[in-house]
Amino acid sequence: MAEIMYREGLNRALLEEMRRDELVFIMGEGIAARGGSYKVTEGLLAEFGPGRVVDTPLAEATFTGAAVGAALVGTRPVVELLFVDFAPMTMDMVVNQAAKYSFMSGGQGTVPMVLRTQGGAGNGLAGQHSQSLEALFYHIPGLKVVMPSSPYDACGLMKSAIRDEGPVIFIEHKLLYMTKGEVPDEEFVVPLGKADVKRKGEDITLITYSYMTLKCLEAAELLAGEGVSVEVVDLRTLTPLDKETILQSIVKTGRGIVVHEAVKRGGVGGDIASMIMEEAYDDLDGPVARICGKNTTIPYNKNLEKVCVPTVEEIVEGILEMV
Image 1 (cartoon, one colour):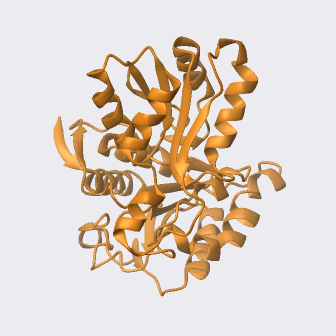
Image 2: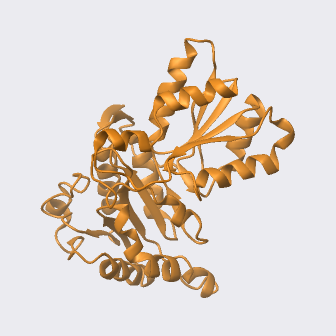
């Protein structure tokens, strides 16, 4: 087992899949010689050349549309959007074309592409570069949505995403790129649609994903010293959603809180909380709670930015109120 950074896990997945399948290629702004703004694609140009590591113009709608077309004719493009905030410019290609093509062609065609991007607050990049927009994609039938929290999951899930026969939205939090974790030396994949219990507990379940997983684990560790046993379920993929793991944990603990950075209104957490109330009501000791981002645009000021997204202290307080 080697300890590597999150961005290195992504790089390794791209490298291994491009070596495994010559139909895999990557495209995006500044991803070739520059290696991407977060160095995820560093070194790939030297091995695979400009035919498979394609620098694009600053035109997200155009090159995403090109990727959809390339996937339709049998290749496996991996498209990088510098910020998830730019994803709305691609919505016609992703939502109206890629997500629906298999269904509307009666299964005669597929769109095996990955749209990878980064989101979330934390670097003082203000309202147009700090959003969490996963709920936009979560709502659309035909799209898979992946949001890993560790180098291991980032590597294994990226490989599964590239091999999938449908369009996958792969969102990486900007504060995770430099985090480290152990990853096996041998090749491996992490299946889509399978959550991971990152910490076992008996008193309450935290259901979370992406960067908030780290905050939930920190909160759980703090409360362990006070005799509160917290289970942390990292969803890893939002669609397919692993309802079985969520419900098994809720049945065990009887209490649940969904934690995510995106704003509470219309967020993924509301859907998950409703699912738990519908399918495990008799096993609950109380209503499912949500700890989410404030319903506001993320400000540039870093101190104001911090209070717009859930903190470890808020998570601890929410747990204590419930237990």
